[in-house]
Image 1 (cartoon, helix red, strand yellow):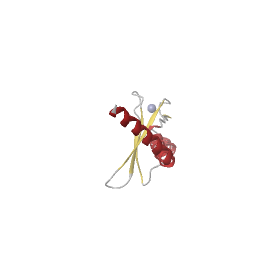
Image 2: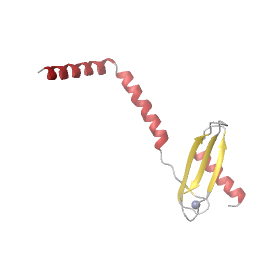
Image 3: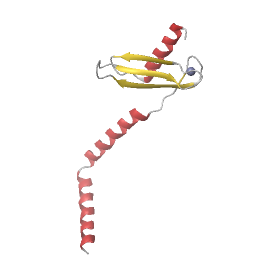
Image 4: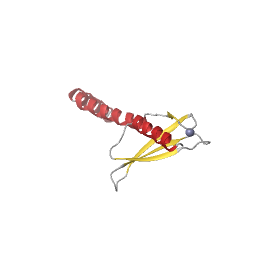
Length: 109
Ligand SMILES: [Zn+2]
């Protein structure tokens, strides 16, 4: 009997709380979505050497120099083209990819 009463009370409080702060609830959810979007967007690009759409870009901040170390690598085992770049700021993947293609063209592979 007591447990059931407590459960009812908790439910009521929870509903009241949700009604009172719908804005904070929304704000929290929106921030979460934004963050996960940035991390999980799977972008794969075409490789300038082998032509396979298997190029992935991973970026990591170097704490020592405060640079962004960005690795561009082809996932094709027969190709394994790989370049490493340093940027002062975090670049969009498409920019990094363009730098990668330019660099490949300049160095002739
Ligand atoms: Zn390749």
